Length: 457
Image (tube, rainbow, N blue to C red; front, side, top):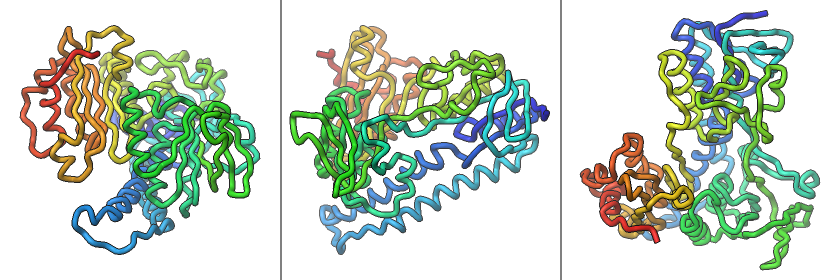
């Protein structure tokens, strides 16, 4: 049996950073990885999708070049080259991470599937490893729903579509949330016909209705077809490729396409870990139950990243590492409940979101002040010719603190950060309102918007 101070299972965003920090403190660390280094973000999430989105954006701007007084020839999509560029970016990120981690002292990399055989004891092939502490960072994978016909037709997921080196003639996307919508706009700009199929009454159910409606308008303006209220989904073969039956009486009851992408959420990679043998509890969906410090039901075993159900983002996984490391090594008392939700939808224009939505704030009984501003009023947006979307901020009328914001528009994924420090600091909105910003930027209009707060209707 090989003994260590710490075992880390998985090399997503939390695992490598934690391994490096523990090893630097003098601990002997074993890092177990069954596949590719970097987890979802590097291999089939943030890095590849945003690289593809960049190519799609270049194509979109090229087609609009005449709007800016620039004359070009016909725009052609070379999908093999686009994929090759994406693959090169991914490989660079993955290989540099693996090389860096393998070069650090006090760290041993173990290849293979990890499985608990008891508390803080893990088997990898014929070897058994044990440690004082074990950290689980195994991430998740796309959920494949048990739809009628799903096993009888070919389908794509957010992972397998990374291998596509052609432009589908007509891409059907089942799922109208963040992942599905990014792929919808991306492939429409590559030249595919795209139909988004969503079971709910609107897109991005997590957002306020006005945000969902604006996102729908943005996609519809690029001729992305959207079918809502598709409550009885079924897949079947079709001469065109695949047909999705919608069970909707409001319009055509089915839609056919050449390819279908299932983008209906994710599930944690916890089913092969032998968690029961270690006394590690999970919820009905397979997410590992953790407390405020990411400790599991088993002593000295922690779960970080997507597998703990406390955020499915790269930045939340990395923050999980920061909380765990600071608590263990610095004796602090950081908790996940201190974290303010922040994320983005990387359509064009992007949506930057922080804190509560208006729907959430209303349910929680806040006395709301709301500020709104259309992006058409933002000089930077007009200058760039990208005036779609709006900005919205929520303030607690009693404490004057900022509760949340949505910035759907050019630079929204960056501009939203200008509110974060004030929210963590518990500052009144006037601290942001009275600050001077650079002109011309998107952020410069946030103080103006705060100066026009009005009670929520």
